[in-house]
Image (cartoon, rainbow over all chains, first blue to last red; front, top):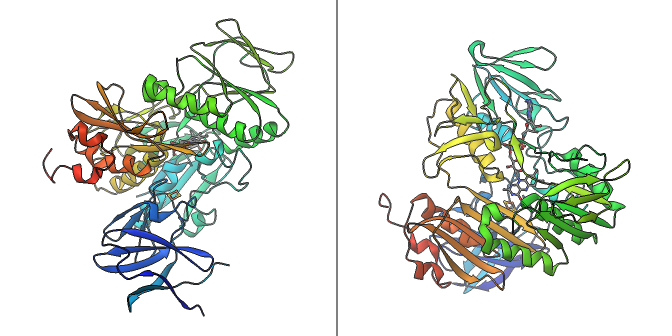
Amino acid sequence: MSDWVRVADAGDVPEGELRSYTVGNRTVAVANVGGDLQAFDDTCTHHGCSLSEGELDGTVVECPCHGGRFDVITGEVVAGPPAEPVDVFEVVEADGEIRIRARDTD
Amino acid sequence: MDVLVVGGGLAGASAISTLRAQGFDGRITLLAEEPVHPYERPPLSKEYLRGETTEPQWVRPPSWYEEQGVDLRLGARAAQVVPGDRVVLLEDGERVPYGRLLVATGVRNRRLEVPGADLPGLFDLRTLADADRLREAAGSATSAVIVGAGFIGCEVAASFRRLGLDVTVVEVFPTPLYRVLGPELGRVVEAMHRDHGVRFVLGEGVASFEGSGRAEAVVTEGGRRLEGDLIVVGVGTKPDAPVGVADERGAVPVGPDLAAESEGVYAAGDVADHDHPIFGRIRVEHYDNAIKMGETAARNLLGAGEVFDDPHWFWSDQYDSQLQVAGFATEWDRMVVRGSLEERSFAAFLLKDGVLRCTVTLDRKLDARRSLPLIRAQARPDPALLADPAVDLRTLRPPEGAG
Ligand SMILES: Cc1cc2nc3c(=O)[nH]c(=O)nc-3n(C[C@H](O)[C@H](O)[C@H](O)COP(=O)(O)OP(=O)(O)OC[C@H]3O[C@@H](n4cnc5c(N)ncnc54)[C@H](O)[C@@H]3O)c2cc1C
Ligand code: FES
């Protein structure tokens, strides 16, 4: 069981944008899709680039290195070179904080 | 309907993946000349060559083909296509019939036709087997001469410097990457390599290779003799389509929808000479294009009738820098720079008659991909806005339907 971790103040991820935070031994990306926050592993499953340095287009994040595209809600690969999905995590914006619950990687 | 894919590389495997994702449950056969499952080539001049990874980067996990019910025939080379009979002949004479055929056979490395070119000990790089040989040889070498400063030559030079080898690069053009980037940007790449200790002999072709029993030196047309423990040749490629669908240069000419002239035949990836709706007839050798053409060809095999109008994009990693190129241009009349060429952090926009054709970035990754919608729309962005790093390129997109 993993715990909720505070990563930022509420409102720190503006609509349509991406940020990244360290949670346990992971780097977690947070996307703001039309006001809803989505959290997913920041490390692209292709060659490990940081997805939060890429582009958010609706519910899809595009990796800056080779254009791999992931659905930020499900973590599934939408297009491009990655073969594996990214993990997605629970995220809430409450009491003036953004909190994430992420499992450590093995 | 049976689908036959010839060429077990990136385009072929991507096409198969799309066929299954589209719900196609008919028979799929993949003829692959190399004895290994489809893998990605980009690491071969980078992480894999440097020994930072030892596993090939598979396009799909090797078990995937069986799971997807693909009849994968490794080590099988198609000798000829007979479109009239809808059959492919293997080298041993076996006939493989097809309903639809996808040709995705890629390219081969060109050889230099000079004295000594058949000496043992000359390396080139295309396949996993080539990379294994080169990596092993680099392990016991202290110096290397690289012939050709195209993308592969430049990446191998960077990897060899990382491994501590002494590196000299010989190039017939006045700068590295001259044909793709032109002299001004080529000089930026040259400076980056020189700063990392690479020596260049530019503007000189190779006259011969010399050595007793094995290649030991490159002799240039200017009479210089460059010795190296290792000599690597990267002087371009030649498309490798089978007889029956190849044109006189070895490519497969295809229409905007990737269909070849013969009924039921398509081509994708490096081998496809494509009638591009924006750029005219072009053939490119890019990773992203191989995936996307494979995907489009698969949908069109099933009757989708899509035009392939991707504006093209690729990258090259050298040292800690990443070069990205969006679009395609062989000529331009204006180059607008955002950032600084000198500091090697820039986006260079290449315009022809005011239309943005190509964007080259060095360590400004997002600007290349953000240019793609502009290039696709053949937009005429204001050069002052292009040059201003504070302007987000996404705000320059022409309105939908215009442009
Ligand atoms: C060392 C290296 C580094 C690269 N780095 C980059 C990079 O950083 N960025 C980038 O954008 N691109 C890069 N590329 C280019 C990219 O890898 C190619 O564009 C891509 O692999 C093309 O895919 P393809 O499927 O068309 O051809 P390939 O992947 O080459 O596959 C073609 C396959 O078909 C097989 N074949 C050929 N003829 C036959 C036949 N008659 N019967 C059966 N099989 C046959 C071949 O053996 C081969 O396995 C690199 C290429 C190399 C070699
Ligand atoms: S590292 Fe993300 S697509 Fe390659």
